[in-house]
Image 1 (cartoon, one colour):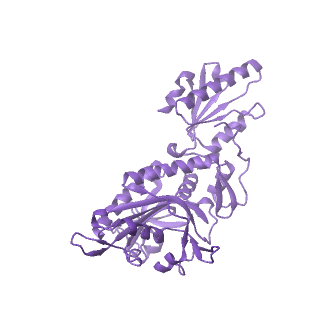
Image 2: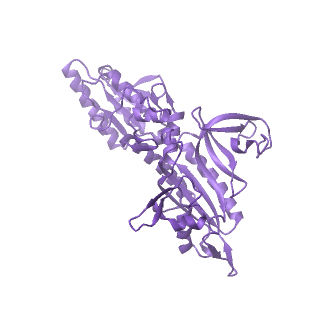
Image 3: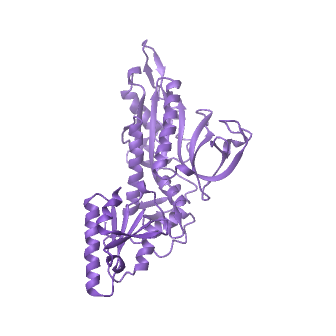
Length: 420
């Protein structure tokens, strides 16, 4: 991609009306655009990051045995009445169709996935099965003020597992705990992310959240300094500030952002729909369920909150919009300047032909080196390459890693080694 043809632009200053850092920095760097509170457009750079997070999640869900589907955004009122949530789910968007029937814009998909599974998963031979999707959700959030961390519309991965008994649900639940850590490791958040005990509500004694430590966090968690398990503030009093895993009282409070959650639903959604399976003896038995959610925009916003400095974003390699940010720096001498352009074009071509993702700042002489370097820091790709008069004097390009001050010259023919 060429910066000269990218239809979006960086801005010199962050938007003053945004309170959250993730919104300020992502808007300033040209990753997202705000339509209204809690509703954002993902621009070309931002969509590349979002798609990379999506693909990481998809790969790990497939590896865990998940089967991907795409369920409707719109669902009929009767499904929500069946579970009793039409009246008591306060965040539910409701609307009328032309037939005067009422519908919901789905904030979650238990009411849709259970009748779906009920048509296809009938016997113990069909179980267990794991169904997931990656799709937009809608919630009437009262606190849509944290950038892409909390929105009225947001993209989410939600998986639903179906089991013959509680023991098998427990087995898969532990597998998903591990799968989530793999996802957050690949997204560059593992070192600051904790498995956190939370209230299970009416479903089970506990559910679990994945909380990432940052001063911008909306949540308070208490981290056990002995076993590194955390407790959500809402259940800390109930446990008398004691770790539910090792019973230590050596807890440390931290601010954090919830980047994922998992729940044991038991039979709370299969029962209302009368969903049962036929066991080995021909008897009907209740289907046990679990659900596992990750907000993609929330992960992206959390990365921005955690991985940045005063110059801009520092994207982890696997989710960066591009691996390399290539810059050509103009020279005063016309002949030298032409040589710089030809060399930069060749480097750009070679990188692309060798499947190294590169964004090329090929803007003309009207854009100074300082502005180009500032934009590179703001956008935050892992590697900056500079072709300049100085570098060409040594038949080289300048290499600098984002987040580090060290610069070095490497021979032009060595550029493709960046792939490794």
